[in-house]
Length: 417
Ligand code: ATP
Ligand code: MG
Image (cartoon, rainbow, N blue to C red):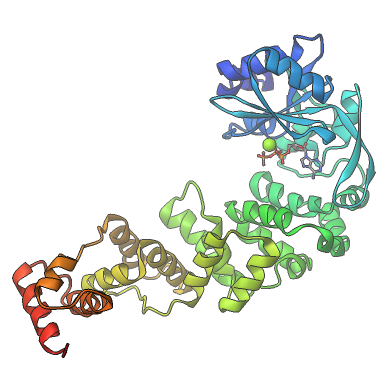
């Protein structure tokens, strides 16, 4: 099937919201084309989420044309020529054709242009400089289609020069190779990435984090991180990654055993690390991780509950109750990745399945019941409850109310008020 047919049939291209955005953009006489990930992924038959559009209209006019058709616009990066059209089904990032006139390794001063070839040349890789019209007609000014067929990730122009304009392109190279490349990464590009690696230090934590997470999610993430380590890049962006062995095993397990459609990058990141609480805190500050992700990493790396593949049902219920489902699953995943490859697969899988079907039992003991047993109002209520709860967990969550009341009475009698 021809590229045009693939593109013309893509679901996102034929959605009503996509059509109204494209119609609005050309309603003032300008031109608009899809570009980047949506075109690339449509040609590969892969899922498309974000839609990027390039237009000859300057950003303020883009905004006005969209608003005139009742489409909501957020001026996300208007100085760089980008506005976001927000529709019920999707977001569209719309960028005016531009050239980078001055760069400092992190960001660029831009000038708008009417020249499609100039716009293509400022992009990073040939496979990301593919454009298509609203009807699916492909525009391929730099040979991206052939590179995509060969699954070859190639810098546009001189790799060294392109990296010095924006060092994030080093990490983007590994990301796009991990997601869309085949075989070994292009040797010349890889060498340029390695030689320019010191420049990575000037990037913000957020940008590095986002790329690392996207690389970590790829099916080929294991190889990508190995290549980054071998070229001295990982030592700069993630020197804490001392457990690539465990990371690679986890990625393999997820691919072979669990068929994960959407890998969890935080779990994968945790698998690479061997850190205490202070170590996670420092990492989280540098990469600007959310508090939620930081706490999850701390818990999975420091929790010492005994997790082995041969836990009994009773031990599983106890661990789930004390740890909560999420931490239990994280620890099981890490434990599985520590095990010898191919061993105890059935047991590890069963532990994850048990966690998924587990429902947290509730101790049937109210504050009123504790008061009725003679405990005065105040902190004592909580202490007594906790003591009964500990016994109840040890009893494997007995649900016989009579036994629980008996235990409550025994606890109260042992205390002098
Ligand atoms: P996806 O959205 O699937 O992650 P994408 O290719 O759409 O992939 P974006 O980060 O959304 O990537 O960027 C859209 C396009 O903008 C890219 O395809 C590329 O052409 C260009 N681009 C983005 N970031 C850079 C960069 N740092 N240097 C050069 N070009 C870039
Ligand atoms: Mg995109």
